[in-house]
Image (tube, rainbow, N blue to C red; front, side, top):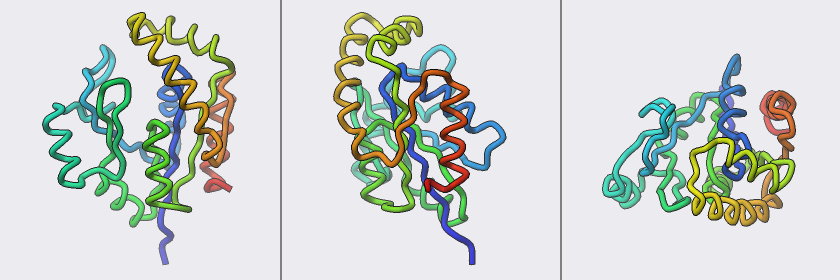
Length: 187
């Protein structure tokens, strides 16, 4: 009998390195990335259907009304959500998934999927380092930067609900640690 898959949820404040870590985790790995839906505008390097499904606010809210999402949240003024059918289809096939989502979405996934959901929080070395990384990224306006740092402090308070916390001092070390969690199915 085939075992159901696991959902590995990776959360972190903006600028902590979760997108980079996720990209490296997916190389040479059996875990499949779930692509979220969002109402925000794509960044320069992002492509529709590869990084996100970029949709209008109206279409997103229609999907919410039709219970299309396993989880959804409003983050930094934009909506993000994960398709319920995508998760269920892959879990039934026994495939493991990687969801890169915020803390609110992570907690919804944990409530819905219980032991099948393994929550991993990627921790920046410090708020000062987080601020430096956000500035270096160059995609945030000054107002955005302040909001993202305030939100980071709120997100850090959610760590107690996570199964694993990984410090991201060096990307390679963080990736190795998370790969071990995935290989061991969260144990």
